[in-house]
Amino acid sequence: MSLIRSLLASLALLPALALAQERIISIGGDVSEIIYALKAEKDLVGRDSTTLLPKAKHLPDVGYMRQLNVEGILSLKPTKVISSVVAQPSVVLEQVKATGVMVEMIPTGHTPEAAVAKITQVGQALNQPQAAQALADDFQKRLAQVPNSLLKTKVLFMMSRAANNVMVAGQNTVADEIIRQVGATNAVQGMVRYSPISQEGIIQANPDLIIVTSESLKTLGSIDKLWEVAGLSHTKAGKNKAYVVVDDVAFMTFGLGIPEEMLKIRQAAERAAP
Image 1 (spheres, one colour):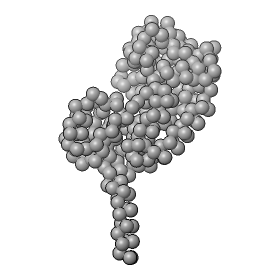
Image 2: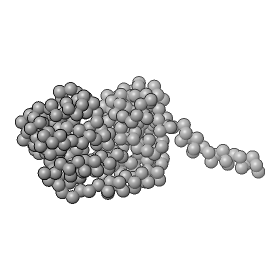
Image 3: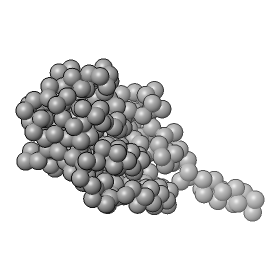
Image 4: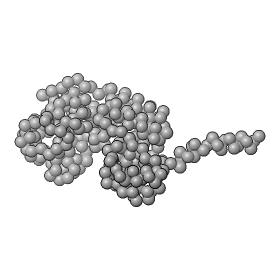
């Protein structure tokens, strides 16, 4: 009888052992963020270059999500790849899938509903639906604490990925959605996506507040360099040095930290209101 009990106990441990043997590669900074929040990082064996979490820097980098290579991924012997749909279309991920590696595609979006769906799906991919539900509930609770009454503040989101190359956010962007959700107005109208802007365009937009990401600020060199962007010194924001720095992953992907970033923007928009 004791032998049978031992066998049954061993069988009961099999699912846990199977999970412990998972080898996961995460593609997408927001996906990696959720994996860490669900405390499943022990199963990670690799990540892509958009994963900026300091605690994930030790993981092998398989490259930028739109420029992956099969050899780099398979060399890490993954059992599963959890990827943002932003990586699609991807011939590489299709080839990885064809080798027998499970590839889970996670939806993205710029709304609270989309963020919750993303958390839920990552939780399912990790076989942690209850933990994901708790994380989603906490996310929604924090988001509900951000005021969204209408302000007259005009906000300009600026991004720099290379020296002397500054872009602003028009409509159909995460930045535009967030600016509207905190009750402010995007200073750039009639422009879609992220685009360069002329000196005249900045002066005409005349924002009250500038949003800049932390990585963009590193690229520019300092906040003083931001005000040297042609035309910015002639705006209300430039004259009042009104700006707010936000986290790249949270802001660009509507990630887990976006409630705090939105609150930060809202408070800055209230201070800069005309």
